[in-house]
Image 1 (tube, rainbow, N blue to C red):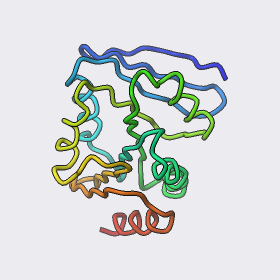
Image 2 (cartoon, rainbow, N blue to C red):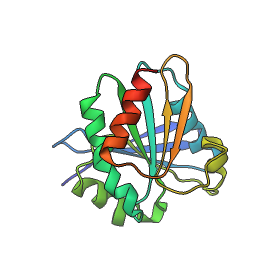
Image 3 (tube, rainbow, N blue to C red):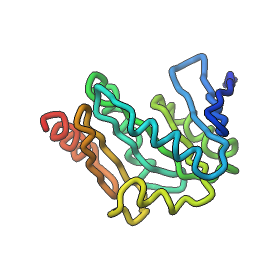
Image 4 (cartoon, helix red, strand yellow):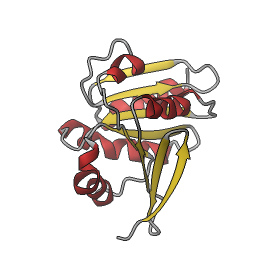
Length: 171
């Protein structure tokens, strides 16, 4: 598969978006010095939305992450008027070409993917949730309007994820 690439700049941050012509898939990858990506992700998290924002933190080396990714993909289609799903990849930048892109293409991941490229990955733990141990998978939910956040550390079975989504929709 051939990818078209375009570059957008945000301050000192260059974002590379790869878009396939065959399906609505893209990978966001920020080349950055420390905090700039943090500002970009924080801006996305803090921006108002009409839907529940779901940020799932994962890596290609995490078996439970891989298992639950299709559930999030399905949820994003089944509840497309209610949720926005973002996958935040914690793989190393060096693995982007050799592991991450092939992984996403093979699994036909359609939701936005943000590759967290920061010098200090651990600094993100408290920024996302002070109670987070750093274990993955982990998922952050942000409700529209109120901005209220719910955090889940650990994996999901499909039924558990559906229950969580239903609970948040009716909150």
